Length: 206
Image (tube, rainbow, N blue to C red; front, side):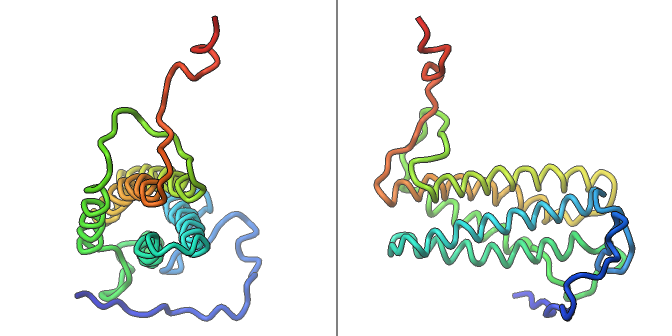
């Protein structure tokens, strides 16, 4: 088991005006443009964290014992996404020995959860549409943001050093979010919305 150092920050003042010129500071203090690849990458991970939190709250509001395991998983994933953001916000030379990060253990745990929840789901014969339940749609939204975060981290890795676990984690998490979206509708007894090409306006015409 790997133990990380706790956060080292004191948010006594929320605005500093230092970013008004369009740059911001990395964990090591370097000033970089706010639209740089590294900022885009961990900013999108932050966006993903917000959507994971939204899905977690929906789990709680539905107040279903069936959904409690997923709610706990999503809360853990939020912590992991903060850990991922921490390492992406730090240049390799500034990484501390016990700095928070995602590890292979996090990837393997997602794989176990994917396998466990996918086991009882019916085989897919078509692509699925987000919907059926609000929680399903929220998880699909999180999945698409996760894929965008993955693309940005892959692009960043072509230009700068990025831990390989960061890409593996996002790749596996997007798969997990897809399985969890299906599992939610199955657990709640709501049919999946399957893609039917001829349900388009073109398909129905004539």
